[in-house]
Structures are given as structure tokens and as C-alpha cells.
Image 1: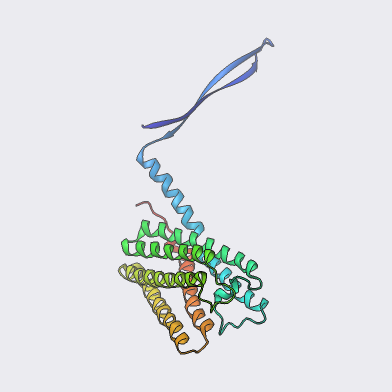
Image 2 (image 1 turned 135 degrees about the vertical axis):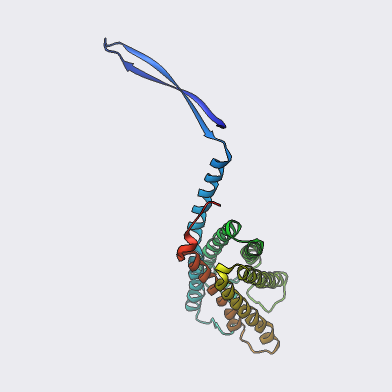
Length: 262
């Protein structure tokens, strides 16, 4: 056996002998860890299994928190119009209740990033490179969203094309592009594996809906329809629905909860 010694130390103990005298004994302790490949692989597998188990439900939690932030923000701001005003206006600089709503978006970001991290771990364990790539691109999207919107929130007057608002738009374009890209990669990746073919079809339908509704944003702005809030919600809520279903599937599907050492 191949062992690695971690620590050596000595403990002393006092004992009372039959004649009433006191004596001291010393015990040598050697802490070691088995160093062979089977043990290390087993420990890694246990960690991955627990990580997957605890991160899969976070997708649903994140979606619920995100929807709550849009609903609560709308209820607390009397002048807010969800048809004409985009979601980012709720947390824009100077918006009422922006600091409160940022707590919700912060929780959402943490839950979603951990959820996608769990999906990446699962993909590397079970699926081929397309699914792995899809979830890595999705993680890039989540990180861009987290840091981009935190650093460049909308200013009070979103029609003012200052540096901050321009960067906010660039972040939005990057998020939309990586969302659509990851969706198509995942759809085709799942479709190539027979046991998750239906999941692939679902993702394909959702990413097509996201793409089509996403195209209505610039069209509506170009035609002066003043429905940015509505068209943006069609995109965002479609994405959130897809994330919720993925989380639900991997949390409650009995076959997916099985974990075998391969």
C-alpha cells in the first residue's frame, strides 16, 4: 500500500498503578492517508456527487427569486410600466428600491452560478463535449451578467448615451449572444444522446423562442412601438422557464439522481 504521512505527534497519559503510584505513558500517533488512485478517485467522486445534489435545486430557487424581484419592483414603484420599461430600470441608478432589489438579483446570481457549475460537473461526468461546451458558455454568460450589470448599471436617464449606458448595452448584447449560443449548443448536444433526446428538443424549442423574441427588441425600438418592457420580458421569462425546467429535471428525475462510478 502507498501511504502519505500527514502528521506525527505524541500524547502523554497519567495512569494509577495497583500500588497507588502514578506513572506516565507516551503514545505515538501517526496520521496518514492512503495515496493510491482508487482512494483519490473515490473521494473525488463523493465530492462531485454531493456538489451535484446540492446545486441542482438552486436553479429553481434562482428563478423564483428573479421573478420576485421583477414583481416586487413593479408593485413598489407606482410609476413603473412593465410594458414600456425594461427590467434593468428597476435597479438603475436613482431608481426607487434599487438597493432592495439588488439583494434579490445578488441571490439570483449566486444561485444560478452554482447551479450552472453543478451542470458543468454533471456534463463532464455523463455527457460529450457539446453539452460540456454548452454549459461552459452558459457559465460565461452568467459571469458576464453578474459583473457587467454590477459595474455598469443604467443611469437615471437611460436615453442618455453616456459611457455607462453604452457599456450596459454592450453587456446586454454579450449576454443575449452567449445565451443563444449556449442554448443551441446544448440542444444539439442533448439531441445526439438518445436517453436525453426529449430534453434536447425542449431546449431547442426554448432557444428558438428566445431568439425570435429577442429579435423583437430592436424591431420594436426601430418602429417606435414603446414596448421594450414587454419584448424583454418575453426573452427573459423564456430563459428563466428553461432554467427552471432544467433544474426541476435534474433535481427530481430518478435516473438523473443515480450516480455510478465509471
